Image (cartoon, rainbow, N blue to C red):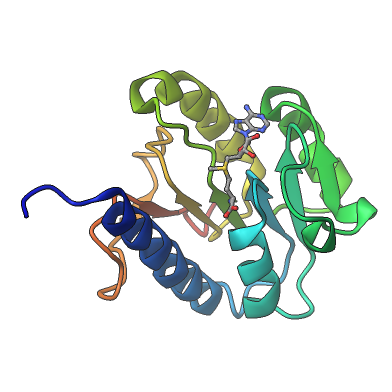
Length: 168
Ligand SMILES: C[S@@+](CC[C@H](N)C(=O)[O-])C[C@H]1O[C@@H](n2cnc3c(N)ncnc32)[C@H](O)[C@@H]1O
């Protein structure tokens, strides 16, 4: 057996997401503020964040609802529309700057994702609170921020963690 199977790759992706979200939850423990999930999808990672961060306001963004009814976020924590349209007003909607943004927006077309991911990254530069984190499934153009190593228990899957300077 040579190349990783589709099952292997799915396990690697989910293992990586779980490990990175756990690390992110630890890193923001002392930072008050809301959290954004960019890409509600089937709500796997949103639901995980809700359990990792009890009491934290977590807002999910997506262009549509693709998850089971019992996983849909409360109406006041759900922002529907294109990221290009919803992110510019996010700070007002959240009532403050997010201390963690988890970006899970990728498609099977990695090359095609680079344009949308770059636009989202550009919007996050100002949006995220000083000292806040972006955890992402794509390169976001945040090279000027501190790139954090992935946790040792992450899988063999490309993922990214950046921290914004505490000076803003
Ligand atoms: C990979 S799925 C998210 C999976 C989800 N985090 C989970 O764990 O189940 C990506 C989601 O991002 C949404 N999405 C991608 N690009 C978007 C954009 N530009 N604006 C709004 N939603 C977008 C898609 O509709 C899709 O539901």
